[in-house]
Image (cartoon, rainbow over all chains, first blue to last red; front, side):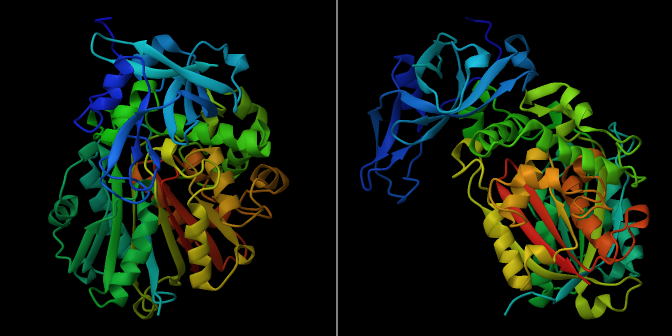
Length: 135
Length: 383
């Protein structure tokens, strides 16, 4: 695990709770206390009403595949050994969209709209990425 | 009150794209383009009192407009960097017109140049995308547009053959453009579909090729432009739209910001899409053209695939589209890729299209697109 060479997130004070939750294999996103909107990516103010009153809450981790591409050529040199791999946008049950990789699914079975669930991948001692797999 | 009809493109210059990095810096390209565009407009350097430019990835710094003004030794009364990615050049046209109409300056040099960038020279991308997109390989433009194409296929049944047709027809025009990077040989749909799959569903021949190049144009008041050697290409309408950065957070993958941008441009010009003699829509990928034509109103939403299949998009066809070959065949020399659509629009309207001249062209649509459909600037130009 020490030789992970792909780009890693560099959390900041705003996003740290997201990655801390991922490390516990939990999906947490923010919700606005003022207007109730679910928020992803992590922010300091609500993307709808701009209220600086966001709380972190656990979410189901369920969603559906909104769109995807199968990378047949690496989108970055560090991904060369992964080809072919699926880059996906998931629409979470709670609404927000999240970028991920779809894992645990033969490429020919990938279809838009398929139900998926979060699958956590510990890529280093410090970092866990949030991937998704068919539910 | 609007800027409709107030300003015009009076001259331009364009460097033939080169495949490699070449032996020239972005500032050297910019100087060449400035000299040639000023001469093309029948002006002297001392006539230039406005400057709009855009970044060069291969020489990226803050305060770039001053770097360019210093290099060219011009003293602008109005200057700035337009940072709308591939929409920057289109965005320059109305900004120049607005500055002229506001009395800030009389004649604006709009200029960009770039050298094929090596990865290590690339500036940082937005931190939110570095944190939440890059770890999953959603990096740069290719996968972003593939996500759009895949969803478009799902929602509207757009086919691989329809997308490929864009590249095929534009190549016909490129073969009449001596400057085009890929202008030597026509291609057919099988060539596109047999080219290497890069990010499914996009094949190699549906993806622009980065290269070295540059371009410039001069915007001045329509009145002043009448004193120049060319028929002034008048800005009749402009519209702009934005609202996302990462494509994951766009409001829609398939209905783009082209819609509000184009609506505003046609509204200002008081014309409709059907009045256009040609279109020059930004074409970083084949799917970009299909989405743009739909959202600009040339066909119904979702009908873009059928539309490009049913029309001849070449310069000689019934729907001339990217008559210079588009960036797909012309090449993408940084921001000069987006500028190539503006310059080709002006070239056609001045009647300087040579072997690819659209017959009786008097009005046309130009669209600039930046990022992953994140910045849109639509123009209606006419003579």
